[in-house]
Length: 339
Figure 1 (cartoon, rainbow, N blue to C red):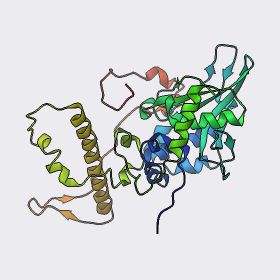
Figure 2: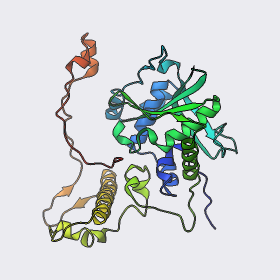
Figure 3: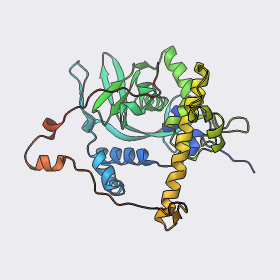
Figure 4: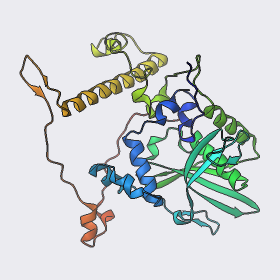
């Protein structure tokens, strides 16, 4: 018996352009980031059952998404202001093989998705659509507004409204800022090239010779914690990673070696985290883990929460919380970004 796979959803396209299995590994998996994002989208758009989804979050997660910022107004500078309350929200859509719009349940759909919000603007004898996607932070999207997910929304939304141009963008909820990409004119060579990439990613389904593909894209894939190709055999700790653990770096690294080791180190870290999380859960359920040498038992230790300023209490006192915010010092970090 062979598995049959459906095409990938729009939200998975940034990963399925590289890996055929990424969309299906992520499809029925909802990590913490995905749950927070879904609850924030629903809460912001006031969709049906949004209160139910928010109620499923922990107190800490609910408090976090309530610090995220609702999309701000966009002044286009030509007398037109785009307001979130006027946008089309949670737009269900399907994209056809000729980059047209169809109902999300249509058999013609090559890929399907729900666009967070978008606007339609007529000026200069043309119709433009703006289609930003809400992300937790601008740092969570390696491709930025060039993401194939947003491109798929743009093509479908533009086709739905018979538009000439779509403008991709990101609303970074943590920072409270828009990040706009270059406008895509539907009648351009660039649009044809981009459309082919969207369709190829949507139809990059697994086959006997096309399954898992490892690379930097794995770090953003929701399904990586369930991926048998990503979670590494622990013997790598004594082979590929061994020289690093023993501080035996007696030769320079080539760029290719550094790339492979970086990816492997990330996989090793997340493999350990998956294993450790599973053991913790079993201990919560009653498993007793005792070190025979020390007699110490591994278990849950309850600690008091950290003290911090309460936005709600500051507002209740009639003060503006923003006046009590202070930005920390700038710092350097390492992550995968477009050069």
